[in-house]
Image (cartoon, rainbow, N blue to C red):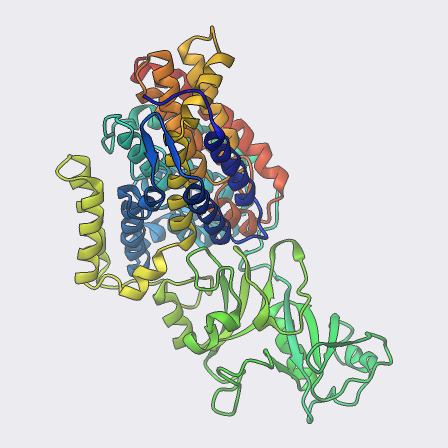
Length: 610
Protein backbone atom coordinates (compact mmCIF):
# COMPACT_ATOMS: atom_id res chain seq x y z
CA UNK A 1 0.00 0.00 0.00
CA UNK A 2 1.56 3.29 -1.06
CA UNK A 3 1.58 6.14 1.38
CA UNK A 4 -0.21 9.35 0.43
CA UNK A 5 2.22 11.41 2.50
CA UNK A 6 4.75 12.90 0.05
CA UNK A 7 8.46 12.99 0.72
CA UNK A 8 11.44 14.65 -0.94
CA UNK A 9 11.55 12.06 -3.72
CA UNK A 10 7.87 12.58 -4.48
CA UNK A 11 8.27 16.32 -4.85
CA UNK A 12 11.46 15.82 -6.90
CA UNK A 13 9.55 13.62 -9.36
CA UNK A 14 6.70 16.14 -9.55
CA UNK A 15 9.15 18.97 -10.23
CA UNK A 16 10.88 16.87 -12.89
CA UNK A 17 7.50 16.23 -14.54
CA UNK A 18 6.81 19.97 -14.66
CA UNK A 19 10.26 20.56 -16.16
CA UNK A 20 9.63 17.81 -18.70
CA UNK A 21 6.28 19.27 -19.74
CA UNK A 22 7.92 22.67 -20.13
CA UNK A 23 10.80 21.30 -22.22
CA UNK A 24 8.40 19.33 -24.43
CA UNK A 25 6.74 22.62 -25.47
CA UNK A 26 10.03 24.29 -26.48
CA UNK A 27 10.25 24.08 -30.27
CA UNK A 28 13.87 25.26 -30.27
CA UNK A 29 15.00 22.28 -28.20
CA UNK A 30 14.87 18.92 -30.03
CA UNK A 31 12.34 16.65 -28.32
CA UNK A 32 14.89 13.84 -28.25
CA UNK A 33 17.32 16.07 -26.32
CA UNK A 34 14.65 17.02 -23.79
CA UNK A 35 13.74 13.37 -23.26
CA UNK A 36 17.37 12.35 -22.82
CA UNK A 37 17.94 15.14 -20.27
CA UNK A 38 14.91 14.10 -18.23
CA UNK A 39 15.94 10.42 -18.31
CA UNK A 40 19.48 11.26 -17.20
CA UNK A 41 18.18 13.50 -14.39
CA UNK A 42 15.79 10.76 -13.23
CA UNK A 43 18.35 7.96 -13.29
CA UNK A 44 21.25 9.91 -11.79
CA UNK A 45 19.03 11.48 -9.14
CA UNK A 46 17.71 8.15 -7.86
CA UNK A 47 21.17 6.58 -8.09
CA UNK A 48 22.76 9.32 -5.96
CA UNK A 49 19.77 9.54 -3.60
CA UNK A 50 18.29 6.02 -3.41
CA UNK A 51 14.61 5.64 -2.61
CA UNK A 52 13.60 3.22 0.11
CA UNK A 53 10.45 3.74 2.13
CA UNK A 54 7.86 1.50 3.79
CA UNK A 55 9.49 -1.56 2.29
CA UNK A 56 9.47 -0.10 -1.22
CA UNK A 57 12.86 0.00 -2.96
CA UNK A 58 13.04 1.79 -6.30
CA UNK A 59 15.98 0.60 -8.40
CA UNK A 60 17.24 2.82 -11.23
CA UNK A 61 17.11 -0.16 -13.60
CA UNK A 62 13.32 0.08 -13.49
CA UNK A 63 13.44 3.39 -15.39
CA UNK A 64 14.81 1.60 -18.46
CA UNK A 65 11.96 -0.88 -18.65
CA UNK A 66 9.99 1.53 -20.84
CA UNK A 67 12.29 0.79 -23.78
CA UNK A 68 11.09 -2.81 -23.72
CA UNK A 69 7.51 -2.10 -22.69
CA UNK A 70 4.85 -4.01 -24.61
CA UNK A 71 3.11 -0.76 -25.56
CA UNK A 72 6.26 0.70 -27.15
CA UNK A 73 7.01 -2.53 -29.05
CA UNK A 74 3.43 -2.55 -30.35
CA UNK A 75 3.61 1.10 -31.39
CA UNK A 76 6.84 0.56 -33.32
CA UNK A 77 5.52 -2.59 -35.02
CA UNK A 78 2.30 -0.85 -36.07
CA UNK A 79 4.25 2.12 -37.42
CA UNK A 80 6.23 -0.24 -39.64
CA UNK A 81 3.11 -2.15 -40.75
CA UNK A 82 1.39 1.13 -41.58
CA UNK A 83 4.44 2.29 -43.53
CA UNK A 84 4.13 -0.72 -45.83
CA UNK A 85 0.64 0.42 -46.87
CA UNK A 86 2.14 3.79 -47.70
CA UNK A 87 5.11 2.51 -49.70
CA UNK A 88 3.10 -0.05 -51.68
CA UNK A 89 0.32 2.39 -52.50
CA UNK A 90 -2.28 0.04 -51.03
CA UNK A 91 -4.69 2.89 -50.31
CA UNK A 92 -4.31 4.61 -53.68
CA UNK A 93 -7.41 3.02 -55.31
CA UNK A 94 -9.45 4.56 -52.51
CA UNK A 95 -7.70 7.89 -53.04
CA UNK A 96 -8.41 7.77 -56.77
CA UNK A 97 -12.10 7.08 -56.13
CA UNK A 98 -12.33 10.06 -53.78
CA UNK A 99 -10.61 12.30 -56.31
CA UNK A 100 -13.19 11.43 -59.00
CA UNK A 101 -16.16 11.85 -56.67
CA UNK A 102 -15.09 15.32 -55.60
CA UNK A 103 -15.66 16.72 -59.07
CA UNK A 104 -19.25 15.46 -59.29
CA UNK A 105 -20.53 15.73 -55.70
CA UNK A 106 -18.43 18.04 -53.50
CA UNK A 107 -20.66 18.09 -50.38
CA UNK A 108 -21.27 14.34 -50.36
CA UNK A 109 -17.58 13.79 -51.11
CA UNK A 110 -16.60 15.90 -48.10
CA UNK A 111 -18.79 13.78 -45.82
CA UNK A 112 -17.42 10.59 -47.37
CA UNK A 113 -13.85 11.84 -46.99
CA UNK A 114 -14.41 12.66 -43.31
CA UNK A 115 -15.95 9.23 -42.64
CA UNK A 116 -13.23 7.33 -44.49
CA UNK A 117 -10.48 9.33 -42.76
CA UNK A 118 -12.04 8.63 -39.36
CA UNK A 119 -12.52 4.89 -39.98
CA UNK A 120 -9.02 4.38 -41.37
CA UNK A 121 -7.53 6.24 -38.40
CA UNK A 122 -9.06 3.67 -36.09
CA UNK A 123 -6.57 1.13 -37.45
CA UNK A 124 -3.72 3.15 -39.00
CA UNK A 125 -1.49 5.99 -37.94
CA UNK A 126 -3.24 9.16 -39.06
CA UNK A 127 -0.10 10.84 -40.43
CA UNK A 128 0.13 8.75 -43.66
CA UNK A 129 -3.64 9.17 -44.10
CA UNK A 130 -3.31 12.96 -43.96
CA UNK A 131 -0.28 12.85 -46.26
CA UNK A 132 -2.19 10.73 -48.78
CA UNK A 133 -5.30 12.94 -48.76
CA UNK A 134 -3.59 16.34 -48.81
CA UNK A 135 -2.72 16.59 -52.53
CA UNK A 136 -6.02 14.93 -53.50
CA UNK A 137 -8.13 17.39 -51.53
CA UNK A 138 -6.14 20.44 -52.65
CA UNK A 139 -6.57 19.44 -56.28
CA UNK A 140 -10.26 18.64 -55.71
CA UNK A 141 -10.89 22.00 -54.08
CA UNK A 142 -9.43 23.77 -57.09
CA UNK A 143 -11.54 21.82 -59.57
CA UNK A 144 -14.75 22.16 -57.56
CA UNK A 145 -14.02 25.85 -56.77
CA UNK A 146 -14.41 25.22 -53.04
CA UNK A 147 -11.99 26.83 -50.56
CA UNK A 148 -9.34 24.32 -49.54
CA UNK A 149 -9.31 25.85 -46.07
CA UNK A 150 -12.83 24.51 -45.52
CA UNK A 151 -11.70 20.98 -46.36
CA UNK A 152 -8.20 20.34 -45.01
CA UNK A 153 -8.73 21.15 -41.34
CA UNK A 154 -11.97 19.14 -41.04
CA UNK A 155 -10.19 16.20 -42.68
CA UNK A 156 -7.29 16.43 -40.24
CA UNK A 157 -9.61 16.60 -37.22
CA UNK A 158 -11.64 13.65 -38.57
CA UNK A 159 -8.53 11.48 -38.33
CA UNK A 160 -8.09 12.56 -34.70
CA UNK A 161 -11.68 11.82 -33.61
CA UNK A 162 -11.60 8.49 -35.47
CA UNK A 163 -8.32 7.45 -33.89
CA UNK A 164 -9.75 7.35 -30.36
CA UNK A 165 -12.16 4.49 -31.15
CA UNK A 166 -9.84 1.45 -30.87
CA UNK A 167 -6.88 0.43 -28.79
CA UNK A 168 -4.60 0.67 -31.84
CA UNK A 169 -6.05 3.92 -33.20
CA UNK A 170 -3.27 6.03 -31.73
CA UNK A 171 -0.09 5.45 -29.77
CA UNK A 172 -1.79 7.29 -26.91
CA UNK A 173 -4.50 4.63 -26.72
CA UNK A 174 -1.95 1.84 -26.64
CA UNK A 175 0.00 3.54 -23.87
CA UNK A 176 -3.02 4.20 -21.67
CA UNK A 177 -4.32 0.65 -22.08
CA UNK A 178 -0.88 -0.85 -21.47
CA UNK A 179 -0.16 1.22 -18.35
CA UNK A 180 -3.64 0.55 -16.95
CA UNK A 181 -2.99 -3.18 -17.35
CA UNK A 182 0.32 -2.78 -15.50
CA UNK A 183 -1.61 -1.15 -12.66
CA UNK A 184 -3.98 -4.11 -12.35
CA UNK A 185 -6.86 -2.89 -14.52
CA UNK A 186 -8.29 -5.46 -16.91
CA UNK A 187 -6.85 -5.40 -20.43
CA UNK A 188 -9.12 -3.49 -22.79
CA UNK A 189 -10.01 -5.30 -26.02
CA UNK A 190 -9.64 -3.59 -29.38
CA UNK A 191 -13.30 -2.55 -29.62
CA UNK A 192 -14.24 -2.36 -25.93
CA UNK A 193 -14.82 1.40 -25.98
CA UNK A 194 -15.75 1.86 -29.63
CA UNK A 195 -19.45 2.56 -28.97
CA UNK A 196 -19.07 5.78 -26.94
CA UNK A 197 -16.16 6.83 -29.17
CA UNK A 198 -18.15 6.17 -32.36
CA UNK A 199 -21.19 8.12 -31.14
CA UNK A 200 -19.04 11.09 -30.10
CA UNK A 201 -17.09 10.87 -33.37
CA UNK A 202 -20.33 10.84 -35.39
CA UNK A 203 -21.49 14.04 -33.72
CA UNK A 204 -18.05 15.55 -34.28
CA UNK A 205 -18.07 14.60 -37.98
CA UNK A 206 -21.46 16.25 -38.47
CA UNK A 207 -19.98 19.42 -36.97
CA UNK A 208 -16.88 19.13 -39.18
CA UNK A 209 -19.09 18.60 -42.25
CA UNK A 210 -21.79 21.22 -41.77
CA UNK A 211 -20.41 23.87 -39.40
CA UNK A 212 -16.59 23.89 -39.43
CA UNK A 213 -16.20 24.92 -43.12
CA UNK A 214 -18.40 27.97 -42.46
CA UNK A 215 -16.27 29.02 -39.50
CA UNK A 216 -13.05 28.97 -41.52
CA UNK A 217 -12.07 32.03 -43.59
CA UNK A 218 -11.06 31.50 -47.20
CA UNK A 219 -7.31 30.96 -46.88
CA UNK A 220 -4.98 30.52 -49.84
CA UNK A 221 -3.47 27.03 -49.63
CA UNK A 222 0.29 27.11 -49.74
CA UNK A 223 0.33 23.87 -51.72
CA UNK A 224 -2.25 24.78 -54.38
CA UNK A 225 -0.74 23.31 -57.52
CA UNK A 226 -2.29 25.83 -59.92
CA UNK A 227 -1.48 29.03 -58.02
CA UNK A 228 1.98 30.58 -58.32
CA UNK A 229 4.01 30.25 -55.14
CA UNK A 230 7.07 32.18 -54.21
CA UNK A 231 10.28 30.25 -53.71
CA UNK A 232 13.69 31.42 -52.61
CA UNK A 233 16.62 30.33 -54.78
CA UNK A 234 20.25 31.16 -55.46
CA UNK A 235 21.38 32.54 -58.84
CA UNK A 236 25.09 31.82 -59.28
CA UNK A 237 26.88 34.30 -61.54
CA UNK A 238 29.63 32.78 -63.70
CA UNK A 239 32.36 34.32 -65.88
CA UNK A 240 30.31 34.09 -69.05
CA UNK A 241 27.07 35.24 -67.42
CA UNK A 242 25.34 38.33 -68.77
CA UNK A 243 25.25 39.66 -65.20
CA UNK A 244 29.05 39.56 -64.79
CA UNK A 245 30.32 43.13 -64.56
CA UNK A 246 26.82 44.66 -64.77
CA UNK A 247 25.24 46.92 -62.17
CA UNK A 248 22.28 45.63 -60.21
CA UNK A 249 19.98 48.12 -61.90
CA UNK A 250 20.96 46.66 -65.31
CA UNK A 251 20.01 43.19 -64.14
CA UNK A 252 16.64 44.43 -62.97
CA UNK A 253 16.05 46.14 -66.33
CA UNK A 254 16.98 42.91 -68.11
CA UNK A 255 14.17 41.12 -66.25
CA UNK A 256 11.67 43.97 -66.82
CA UNK A 257 11.92 44.88 -63.14
CA UNK A 258 10.28 41.56 -62.24
CA UNK A 259 13.23 40.07 -60.35
CA UNK A 260 13.42 40.78 -56.64
CA UNK A 261 16.92 40.42 -55.22
CA UNK A 262 16.79 39.91 -51.46
CA UNK A 263 20.51 39.46 -50.76
CA UNK A 264 23.81 39.52 -52.63
CA UNK A 265 26.48 37.14 -51.32
CA UNK A 266 30.16 37.37 -52.21
CA UNK A 267 32.60 34.73 -51.05
CA UNK A 268 31.53 32.46 -48.20
CA UNK A 269 29.47 34.75 -45.98
CA UNK A 270 30.08 38.35 -47.14
CA UNK A 271 26.93 40.29 -47.96
CA UNK A 272 27.04 43.13 -50.46
CA UNK A 273 24.75 46.12 -50.25
CA UNK A 274 21.83 46.00 -52.70
CA UNK A 275 22.43 49.46 -54.13
CA UNK A 276 21.36 50.11 -57.74
CA UNK A 277 24.99 50.88 -58.62
CA UNK A 278 26.39 47.71 -57.06
CA UNK A 279 28.48 45.86 -59.64
CA UNK A 280 27.83 42.12 -59.82
CA UNK A 281 30.90 39.94 -60.23
CA UNK A 282 31.55 36.34 -61.23
CA UNK A 283 31.09 34.09 -58.22
CA UNK A 284 28.40 36.27 -56.67
CA UNK A 285 25.18 34.63 -55.54
CA UNK A 286 21.86 36.42 -55.71
CA UNK A 287 19.13 35.35 -53.32
CA UNK A 288 15.91 35.85 -55.29
CA UNK A 289 12.29 35.00 -54.65
CA UNK A 290 9.65 34.25 -57.27
CA UNK A 291 7.53 31.54 -58.87
CA UNK A 292 9.27 28.46 -60.33
CA UNK A 293 8.59 29.64 -63.88
CA UNK A 294 10.04 33.11 -63.28
CA UNK A 295 13.10 31.70 -61.54
CA UNK A 296 13.89 29.63 -64.60
CA UNK A 297 13.32 32.70 -66.79
CA UNK A 298 15.77 34.76 -64.71
CA UNK A 299 18.31 31.97 -65.03
CA UNK A 300 17.99 32.16 -68.81
CA UNK A 301 18.01 35.97 -69.11
CA UNK A 302 21.02 36.49 -66.86
CA UNK A 303 22.98 33.49 -68.06
CA UNK A 304 23.21 32.35 -64.45
CA UNK A 305 22.92 28.95 -62.81
CA UNK A 306 20.03 28.20 -60.48
CA UNK A 307 21.35 25.82 -57.85
CA UNK A 308 23.35 25.54 -54.64
CA UNK A 309 26.97 26.37 -55.41
CA UNK A 310 28.35 24.33 -52.51
CA UNK A 311 26.53 21.16 -53.53
CA UNK A 312 29.50 19.00 -54.38
CA UNK A 313 27.61 15.73 -54.11
CA UNK A 314 26.09 15.90 -57.61
CA UNK A 315 27.53 19.00 -59.29
CA UNK A 316 25.72 20.31 -62.34
CA UNK A 317 27.79 19.54 -65.45
CA UNK A 318 27.43 18.87 -69.18
CA UNK A 319 26.44 15.30 -68.31
CA UNK A 320 23.78 16.47 -65.85
CA UNK A 321 22.63 19.93 -66.94
CA UNK A 322 20.00 21.73 -64.95
CA UNK A 323 17.84 22.34 -68.00
CA UNK A 324 18.43 19.04 -69.79
CA UNK A 325 15.68 17.57 -71.92
CA UNK A 326 13.38 15.30 -69.91
CA UNK A 327 14.04 17.19 -66.69
CA UNK A 328 11.04 18.03 -64.53
CA UNK A 329 10.22 20.33 -61.67
CA UNK A 330 8.67 18.65 -58.64
CA UNK A 331 7.39 20.09 -55.40
CA UNK A 332 8.25 18.10 -52.28
CA UNK A 333 6.55 18.56 -48.92
CA UNK A 334 8.59 17.85 -45.81
CA UNK A 335 6.61 15.47 -43.58
CA UNK A 336 7.57 13.92 -40.27
CA UNK A 337 8.46 10.61 -41.93
CA UNK A 338 10.65 12.36 -44.48
CA UNK A 339 14.44 11.93 -44.21
CA UNK A 340 14.58 15.73 -44.53
CA UNK A 341 12.54 16.49 -41.40
CA UNK A 342 14.52 18.69 -38.99
CA UNK A 343 17.66 18.14 -41.09
CA UNK A 344 19.54 20.04 -43.77
CA UNK A 345 19.80 18.99 -47.40
CA UNK A 346 23.53 18.55 -46.96
CA UNK A 347 23.12 16.44 -43.81
CA UNK A 348 20.50 14.21 -45.44
CA UNK A 349 22.65 13.83 -48.60
CA UNK A 350 19.43 14.31 -50.51
CA UNK A 351 20.96 15.19 -53.88
CA UNK A 352 23.27 12.18 -53.84
CA UNK A 353 20.53 9.80 -52.74
CA UNK A 354 17.83 10.81 -55.23
CA UNK A 355 19.84 12.46 -58.05
CA UNK A 356 17.80 15.66 -57.71
CA UNK A 357 18.81 19.30 -57.31
CA UNK A 358 16.88 21.49 -54.86
CA UNK A 359 16.38 24.87 -56.50
CA UNK A 360 14.35 26.69 -53.88
CA UNK A 361 12.56 26.45 -50.55
CA UNK A 362 9.12 27.78 -49.64
CA UNK A 363 8.22 28.12 -45.98
CA UNK A 364 4.83 28.78 -44.44
CA UNK A 365 4.33 32.38 -43.38
CA UNK A 366 6.73 33.73 -45.98
CA UNK A 367 9.75 33.62 -43.68
CA UNK A 368 13.05 34.31 -45.40
CA UNK A 369 16.22 32.30 -45.31
CA UNK A 370 19.07 34.18 -43.74
CA UNK A 371 21.94 32.13 -45.11
CA UNK A 372 23.63 32.10 -48.44
CA UNK A 373 23.33 28.37 -49.07
CA UNK A 374 20.06 26.50 -49.18
CA UNK A 375 21.89 23.25 -48.46
CA UNK A 376 22.43 24.37 -44.86
CA UNK A 377 18.87 25.50 -44.15
CA UNK A 378 17.22 23.35 -41.48
CA UNK A 379 13.95 22.04 -42.88
CA UNK A 380 10.71 22.07 -40.90
CA UNK A 381 7.39 20.26 -41.09
CA UNK A 382 5.37 21.56 -44.06
CA UNK A 383 8.27 23.16 -45.94
CA UNK A 384 7.96 22.87 -49.73
CA UNK A 385 11.06 22.20 -51.82
CA UNK A 386 11.30 22.91 -55.53
CA UNK A 387 13.37 20.08 -57.00
CA UNK A 388 14.62 19.44 -60.51
CA UNK A 389 15.73 16.19 -62.05
CA UNK A 390 14.89 13.57 -64.61
CA UNK A 391 11.38 12.14 -64.79
CA UNK A 392 12.81 8.78 -63.74
CA UNK A 393 14.45 10.29 -60.64
CA UNK A 394 11.20 11.97 -59.58
CA UNK A 395 9.28 8.77 -60.20
CA UNK A 396 11.73 6.81 -58.06
CA UNK A 397 11.41 9.42 -55.31
CA UNK A 398 7.65 8.95 -55.30
CA UNK A 399 7.89 5.17 -55.28
CA UNK A 400 10.26 5.30 -52.31
CA UNK A 401 7.46 6.66 -50.13
CA UNK A 402 10.01 8.75 -48.21
CA UNK A 403 8.48 12.12 -49.06
CA UNK A 404 5.24 13.67 -50.28
CA UNK A 405 5.69 14.72 -53.93
CA UNK A 406 3.07 17.01 -55.48
CA UNK A 407 4.21 16.72 -59.09
CA UNK A 408 1.09 15.65 -61.01
CA UNK A 409 3.01 14.36 -64.07
CA UNK A 410 4.19 11.23 -62.28
CA UNK A 411 1.91 8.40 -61.22
CA UNK A 412 1.39 7.83 -57.52
CA UNK A 413 3.25 4.83 -56.10
CA UNK A 414 1.49 1.54 -56.78
CA UNK A 415 3.03 -1.89 -56.81
CA UNK A 416 1.84 -5.48 -57.13
CA UNK A 417 2.56 -5.89 -53.41
CA UNK A 418 -0.31 -3.57 -52.45
CA UNK A 419 -2.97 -6.34 -52.13
CA UNK A 420 -0.58 -8.42 -50.02
CA UNK A 421 0.15 -5.48 -47.70
CA UNK A 422 -3.55 -4.75 -47.35
CA UNK A 423 -4.29 -8.42 -46.63
CA UNK A 424 -1.63 -8.61 -43.93
CA UNK A 425 -2.96 -5.46 -42.28
CA UNK A 426 -6.48 -6.92 -42.24
CA UNK A 427 -5.16 -10.13 -40.66
CA UNK A 428 -3.43 -8.14 -37.92
CA UNK A 429 -6.64 -6.27 -37.13
CA UNK A 430 -8.87 -9.37 -37.25
CA UNK A 431 -6.65 -11.53 -35.03
CA UNK A 432 -6.42 -8.75 -32.46
CA UNK A 433 -10.11 -7.87 -32.71
CA UNK A 434 -11.30 -11.44 -32.06
CA UNK A 435 -8.85 -11.90 -29.20
CA UNK A 436 -6.94 -14.69 -30.94
CA UNK A 437 -3.64 -13.08 -29.89
CA UNK A 438 -2.50 -9.91 -28.09
CA UNK A 439 -2.13 -6.88 -30.33
CA UNK A 440 1.60 -6.79 -29.60
CA UNK A 441 1.98 -10.32 -31.02
CA UNK A 442 -0.27 -9.56 -34.00
CA UNK A 443 1.59 -6.35 -34.85
CA UNK A 444 5.02 -7.98 -34.54
CA UNK A 445 3.94 -10.94 -36.67
CA UNK A 446 2.43 -8.58 -39.24
CA UNK A 447 5.68 -6.66 -39.42
CA UNK A 448 7.58 -9.88 -40.03
CA UNK A 449 5.17 -10.93 -42.79
CA UNK A 450 5.53 -7.53 -44.48
CA UNK A 451 9.30 -7.99 -44.56
CA UNK A 452 9.15 -11.62 -45.71
CA UNK A 453 6.71 -10.78 -48.50
CA UNK A 454 8.90 -7.80 -49.48
CA UNK A 455 6.14 -5.27 -49.00
CA UNK A 456 8.82 -3.03 -47.52
CA UNK A 457 12.57 -3.11 -47.04
CA UNK A 458 14.54 -2.88 -43.83
CA UNK A 459 15.37 0.70 -44.77
CA UNK A 460 11.65 1.45 -45.04
CA UNK A 461 11.11 -0.21 -41.67
CA UNK A 462 13.83 1.82 -39.98
CA UNK A 463 12.61 5.03 -41.60
CA UNK A 464 9.10 4.35 -40.27
CA UNK A 465 10.37 4.48 -36.70
CA UNK A 466 10.39 7.88 -35.05
CA UNK A 467 13.14 8.61 -32.54
CA UNK A 468 10.90 11.25 -31.00
CA UNK A 469 8.08 8.76 -30.41
CA UNK A 470 10.43 6.13 -28.95
CA UNK A 471 12.14 8.59 -26.60
CA UNK A 472 9.03 10.36 -25.35
CA UNK A 473 7.19 7.09 -24.75
CA UNK A 474 10.12 5.54 -22.86
CA UNK A 475 10.78 8.67 -20.79
CA UNK A 476 7.09 9.22 -20.05
CA UNK A 477 6.82 5.60 -18.87
CA UNK A 478 9.81 6.16 -16.60
CA UNK A 479 8.28 9.32 -15.14
CA UNK A 480 4.94 7.59 -14.67
CA UNK A 481 6.64 4.67 -12.94
CA UNK A 482 8.49 7.01 -10.60
CA UNK A 483 5.25 8.90 -9.91
CA UNK A 484 3.48 5.70 -8.83
CA UNK A 485 6.34 4.14 -6.85
CA UNK A 486 7.08 7.29 -4.82
CA UNK A 487 3.42 7.86 -4.00
CA UNK A 488 3.14 10.92 -6.21
CA UNK A 489 0.13 9.61 -8.15
CA UNK A 490 -1.73 8.85 -4.95
CA UNK A 491 -0.81 12.27 -3.55
CA UNK A 492 -2.15 14.10 -6.63
CA UNK A 493 -5.25 11.93 -6.70
CA UNK A 494 -5.92 12.62 -3.01
CA UNK A 495 -5.69 16.37 -3.61
CA UNK A 496 -7.90 16.21 -6.71
CA UNK A 497 -10.53 14.28 -4.75
CA UNK A 498 -10.32 16.85 -1.94
CA UNK A 499 -10.83 19.61 -4.52
CA UNK A 500 -13.94 18.00 -6.04
CA UNK A 501 -15.40 16.69 -2.77
CA UNK A 502 -19.16 16.51 -2.96
CA UNK A 503 -19.20 16.32 -6.74
CA UNK A 504 -21.08 13.47 -8.39
CA UNK A 505 -18.71 10.82 -9.80
CA UNK A 506 -19.82 11.71 -13.33
CA UNK A 507 -18.60 15.29 -12.84
CA UNK A 508 -15.31 14.07 -11.38
CA UNK A 509 -14.72 12.02 -14.54
CA UNK A 510 -15.79 14.91 -16.76
CA UNK A 511 -13.42 17.29 -14.97
CA UNK A 512 -10.53 14.83 -15.33
CA UNK A 513 -11.24 14.48 -19.06
CA UNK A 514 -11.35 18.26 -19.54
CA UNK A 515 -8.08 18.64 -17.64
CA UNK A 516 -6.41 16.13 -19.96
CA UNK A 517 -7.90 17.84 -23.02
CA UNK A 518 -6.38 21.16 -21.98
CA UNK A 519 -3.03 19.55 -21.18
CA UNK A 520 -2.79 17.63 -24.47
CA UNK A 521 -3.06 20.89 -26.46
CA UNK A 522 0.00 22.24 -24.65
CA UNK A 523 2.30 19.22 -24.33
CA UNK A 524 2.69 15.85 -26.02
CA UNK A 525 -0.48 13.77 -25.83
CA UNK A 526 1.62 10.69 -25.03
CA UNK A 527 3.31 12.43 -22.12
CA UNK A 528 -0.01 13.72 -20.79
CA UNK A 529 -1.64 10.30 -21.10
CA UNK A 530 1.18 8.36 -19.46
CA UNK A 531 1.33 10.75 -16.51
CA UNK A 532 -2.47 11.00 -16.25
CA UNK A 533 -3.25 7.27 -16.27
CA UNK A 534 -1.81 6.34 -12.85
CA UNK A 535 -3.41 9.46 -11.38
CA UNK A 536 -6.79 8.40 -12.80
CA UNK A 537 -6.47 4.92 -11.29
CA UNK A 538 -5.54 6.41 -7.92
CA UNK A 539 -8.57 8.76 -8.05
CA UNK A 540 -10.88 5.81 -8.74
CA UNK A 541 -9.42 3.86 -5.82
CA UNK A 542 -9.68 6.93 -3.59
CA UNK A 543 -13.38 7.19 -4.42
CA UNK A 544 -13.94 3.43 -4.27
CA UNK A 545 -15.24 3.36 -7.86
CA UNK A 546 -14.53 1.22 -10.92
CA UNK A 547 -11.38 2.62 -12.55
CA UNK A 548 -12.29 1.79 -16.16
CA UNK A 549 -14.26 4.98 -16.81
CA UNK A 550 -11.49 7.06 -15.24
CA UNK A 551 -8.84 5.43 -17.44
CA UNK A 552 -10.96 6.06 -20.53
CA UNK A 553 -11.45 9.69 -19.45
CA UNK A 554 -7.67 10.09 -19.67
CA UNK A 555 -7.56 8.23 -22.99
CA UNK A 556 -10.29 10.33 -24.61
CA UNK A 557 -9.07 13.61 -23.12
CA UNK A 558 -5.52 13.04 -24.32
CA UNK A 559 -6.84 12.54 -27.86
CA UNK A 560 -8.59 15.94 -28.02
CA UNK A 561 -5.67 17.68 -29.75
CA UNK A 562 -7.83 20.12 -31.69
CA UNK A 563 -7.30 23.62 -30.34
CA UNK A 564 -3.75 24.49 -31.44
CA UNK A 565 -1.59 23.68 -34.48
CA UNK A 566 1.20 22.45 -32.19
CA UNK A 567 -1.04 19.99 -30.35
CA UNK A 568 -0.38 17.18 -32.83
CA UNK A 569 1.99 16.56 -35.72
CA UNK A 570 -0.76 16.35 -38.36
CA UNK A 571 -2.10 19.69 -37.15
CA UNK A 572 1.24 21.25 -38.11
CA UNK A 573 1.10 19.68 -41.55
CA UNK A 574 -2.47 20.90 -42.10
CA UNK A 575 -1.53 24.33 -40.71
CA UNK A 576 1.21 24.73 -43.31
CA UNK A 577 -0.60 23.16 -46.26
CA UNK A 578 -3.83 25.11 -45.81
CA UNK A 579 -2.28 28.51 -45.13
CA UNK A 580 -4.17 28.69 -41.84
CA UNK A 581 -3.60 31.09 -38.97
CA UNK A 582 -3.28 30.07 -35.33
CA UNK A 583 -6.69 31.62 -34.63
CA UNK A 584 -8.32 29.27 -37.17
CA UNK A 585 -7.51 26.29 -34.97
CA UNK A 586 -8.96 28.05 -31.95
CA UNK A 587 -12.09 29.01 -33.91
CA UNK A 588 -12.80 25.42 -35.00
CA UNK A 589 -10.90 23.36 -32.43
CA UNK A 590 -12.40 24.81 -29.22
CA UNK A 591 -16.03 24.09 -30.22
CA UNK A 592 -14.96 20.62 -31.38
CA UNK A 593 -13.28 19.99 -28.03
CA UNK A 594 -16.43 21.06 -26.19
CA UNK A 595 -18.63 18.85 -28.41
CA UNK A 596 -16.48 15.74 -27.91
CA UNK A 597 -15.96 16.43 -24.20
CA UNK A 598 -19.67 16.94 -23.45
CA UNK A 599 -20.64 13.92 -25.55
CA UNK A 600 -18.20 11.60 -23.83
CA UNK A 601 -19.00 13.03 -20.39
CA UNK A 602 -22.56 11.85 -20.95
CA UNK A 603 -21.71 8.57 -22.70
CA UNK A 604 -18.90 7.23 -20.49
CA UNK A 605 -21.01 6.65 -17.33
CA UNK A 606 -23.70 5.01 -19.48
CA UNK A 607 -21.42 2.47 -21.15
CA UNK A 608 -19.06 2.06 -18.17
CA UNK A 609 -21.18 2.26 -14.99
CA UNK A 610 -19.36 3.52 -11.92
